[in-house]
Structures are given as C-alpha cells and as structure tokens.
Image 1 (spheres, one colour):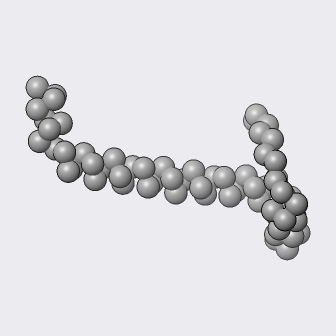
Image 2 (cartoon, one colour):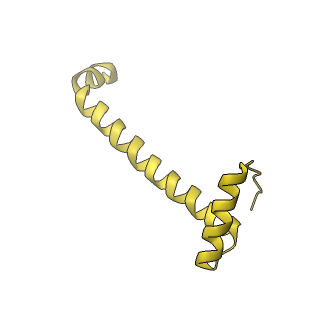
Length: 66
C-alpha cells in the first residue's frame, strides 16, 4: 500500500478525530473509507454521464466508427 499525505485544517482534523473516536476506528481508516466511497460514487456518476452522452450522440458515433 502506498501512502498519501493530505493536509487538513484544524477543524477538519478535529472532526475526523471525533468521528474516528465515536466509531472506534483509527482516523486513517475513516479517511480511507471516505475516499473509497467518493471514488465509487464518482465512477458511477461519470459512467452514467458517459452512457448518456453516448446515447445522445449515437448517430455521430456510428458515423465516426465507419
């Protein structure tokens, strides 16, 4: 696993620490899960947008593929 260093302001760092403490997790685990959820959501959003654009421009894409 590679390390990534992210600078957090005092308020964000305190909220992360509080959430980690409340859930019994390490702050790193909470941050890692948040990043994973964000990546899944963005991947789904981008995939939906790509499908929408492909459908919208279907005729053009077919002509370009000929």
